[in-house]
Image 1: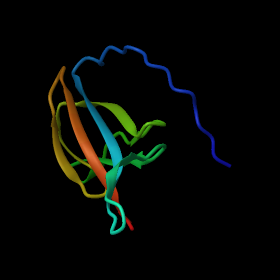
Image 2: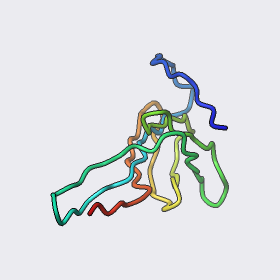
Image 3: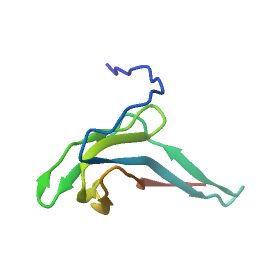
Image 4: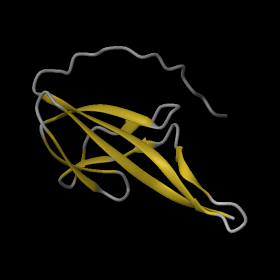
Length: 106
């Protein structure tokens, strides 16, 4: 059983003393011997781990379009299974693209 939720765009105020981490998770496609092919495909409903040092921080989950948003205190974080480093500043939004896979098209 797969359960999804309907998404609505809404404005939210960041909690005091935090910034926001926004990202998109995608699979990259490339190749094609018979016909050139390539592109990017979003990954919906994916759990995105976030670490502060060696401790897990607030995890995020992608929406139906592959985007995620999570408020975090200012600091340095590692995101995703590749542990990409990102700095979050107080009152600001940090964007990070995360490639979570590759697909060869032939």
